[in-house]
Image 1 (cartoon, rainbow, N blue to C red):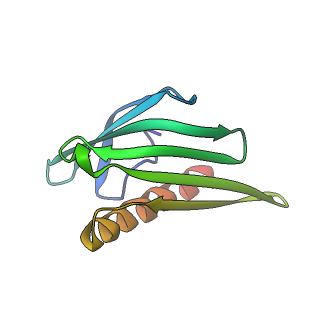
Image 2 (image 1 turned 135 degrees about the vertical axis):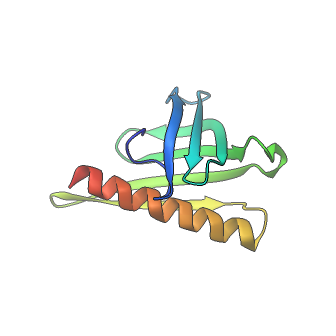
Length: 113
């Protein structure tokens, strides 16, 4: 997670994960501008090698909790990852999270290349 999480303009400063139903995660990212961003949530569902569902909220706006679902599907020697981030607060939040997730997934793909 420290090597791939976050869009291209951030580096991971801290990460904590307790990947079990009811477990929590927390990530601290630093933008190239120096801005600090902290997000956290709770794991709601885990199906090994298939599905991960977790809540998501920024420390600065905890009332705007949303939900992320990640599914994995085998496709020959590859894996298809689908990420759905639901219950976002508004269009600006949706666009920002789309940029962030796209950057993270691009970095994840490079990590496994």
